[in-house]
Length: 521
Image (cartoon, rainbow, N blue to C red; front, side, top):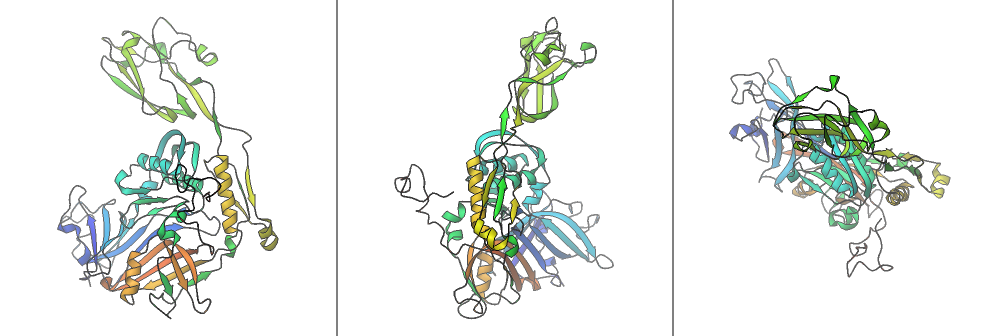
């Protein structure tokens, strides 16, 4: 049977340009199947820096009238059961806390029964949407990781109104993304920020970036927001089935990092083309043409110069002398009537637009581009950090962090912090919670990724231990009457983090005094 519960509201925006009563599918959600939700990040055993994992939602709808069949012509939403439709799940006034629970886009559809009386829908969170895009971002110097993440999201078409980005602690001497999957570019940037950094989806679907200083400064991550007990003492309680992992396989006591170091060559010819017969193709009066050019290496390109037909005919001289002659030969209009423009000025992929503002048609067959190439520097310094006492006790446990774009100083800070935090085991815990009382339900609705919580198992310790929430999964059953949330946690340090007044902030009267304040790495 379908649900009549008012605890949750489930909307699917079937028509992309409008909303209607047809978008509310709550009444058609089948109570015999649970709604499954998942979002957060994955801190695995092999790498203490979280892996980007898109959120997911699954739900089943009553399809006895074929309302949710993509090819049904009689349906009120005929022609609109398509992938990419916006899915939002919110808590209604019947829940202890109202507001967004999950948001994403339809990604898959399955049918069950004979005939197909049930429709199982799968939706993915925003990180999945972004990850499907290949992005090109021109080279930037001296920007922070948060700014770079914003540029990747821009290139992937993600709205600026749906992101919450920290500034970032790491400064990138030079960074670019050249025709790569957005997910790969984002993961490199999270790696470049270091341990404590995270990129995940908020309940309202926003993409959120927390930099590595967040846990020093934010109340939600620095101080415990709730205490969950195993059935003794004050509520909330956690449910049976908690899974404890001692974290022995996550020890890291040896790490080496080679940050990407690049340099710019002197100007050279990076592209040239000699047209057949020197007369093809033709550009009419007032016409523009866009040439999509792919170079071998990221380059700072120069705007091409123009000359008339009678000069600069010796194309071969370009290679040996990039300063020889103009870059594009034209006929008909004067060279001053030609205009060139790039979409970007740095990178490997360029859209070069040529415009003929003259009074006669011209050709542009013989052409070249000049610029300085960004090249990898041979013999870059390798950053090393190790913990001898940990190696003596547990054996050598090495980690390859992969590509990062930081300065050598930031790379050293990242390496030192990883070894400092993971030279000894860091426990992990999978904590289930059900809505046994309003106390548990309220916590299930209010807790968020990276929140710090305390877990007390009286069989182990009367005081418990603090953990950070990495990932939240939820099962909503019986029309919203039964909820089971599961938190994937990893242990927070047993020693207090720096207070917000202990971090050095330059130009601050109270926190900018050298030799008196602690400096967050």
